[in-house]
Length: 185
Image (cartoon, rainbow, N blue to C red; front, side, top):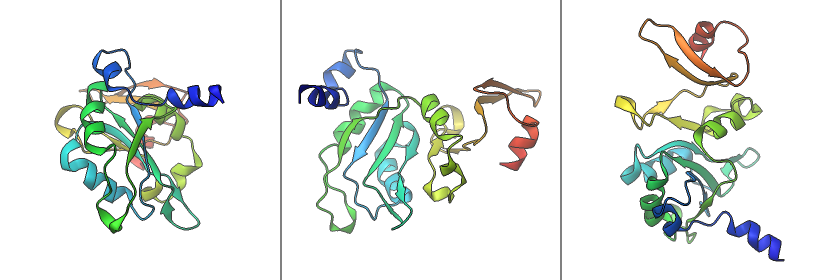
């Protein structure tokens, strides 16, 4: 029993450890989401006071009953953003559908935007309806808070250079011409 408790404890948020810089994790699991909530509804709730503070959201969907499975994953742009997000959402009731469910936050197993992208980019999930896929957001510059395309190729990060070319960090070598890939998406 001790190991199960220890395993559960590693996912608990400790605000003091975040404040001291001891815990630098940024990816959270939002638990106890009413099943009728859609990604759009969650985004509306998040963006009331947290737009631009996160760069990834994924609300898993049960394809059989077309409802969410009761939890979501969000990646905050920095550990400092976890604190106000925790204070705003943890222990709060959801506003829609007269739900009695109370939001609860924990750390996710997969941490960071790059690891999340790597986990999902070649998933069959990326072939599903776009409302069922993970969503990426820009977290820097003028486009902060706006949706970022999720390239379901073997690319990790691509930056468009001033001359129009692209410089990329590859997880694997891309199949085909990068410009063709970007035009298709």
